[in-house]
Length: 81
Length: 160
Image 1 (cartoon, rainbow over the protein chains, first blue to last red):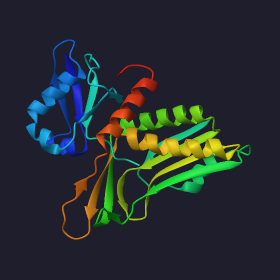
Image 2 (image 1 turned 180 degrees about the horizontal axis):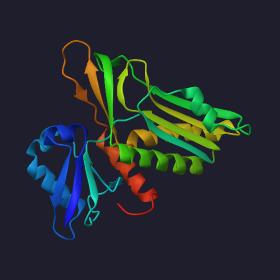
Image 3 (image 1 turned 90 degrees about the vertical axis):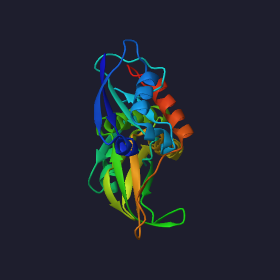
Image 4 (image 1 turned 180 degrees about the vertical axis):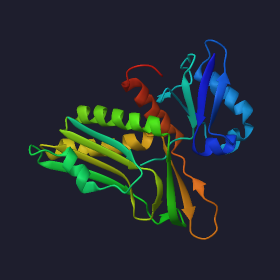
């Protein structure tokens, strides 16, 4: 299945892009998507944080399952306010 | 309960937000403003950049305003967060809680800024005086994990 993925802040800088499409196996979870991203951008592991993920504009845990067409976002721990 | 929530890229006007949030039945208005300070640890800050995931920030700000305004029983709750380049002294975030009495307003105001800091998809980048490289600020992961958990548990619909 295909999901869209967007990167923000330092994650976007390390990945060198703001987003892309990911092809995942049916039944994939957020953890699977995160694993793919960290394999693709190994410098993320050295960034000093575990990235957070949102699915369809809500914070999501790593065990959340994904569906075709979902919008994922991967980003550092937030620092607004 | 009157929730007011917006992400802006222009300077925040507190009096305007107070007017929108408050009614004649309110005897208490509790406000919090987060402003850019001139130092971070030992270093002199020149300015900050606030970056957001705009679509999610707008939705999450609404969720926070509705959830907390309802939970604390205030009559109005206004949340405004600014993005873009901010100079020292400029306001990045404003929380206004209005209620007939002060307890609800003060407690709601305090809870709202904590929720914004743990849940809102916004990141700040610090630019220092002199030639030091700018640095992203990360929130502490444990804070974000609990904020994210709270967001998932309280929200309805998909994504969690």
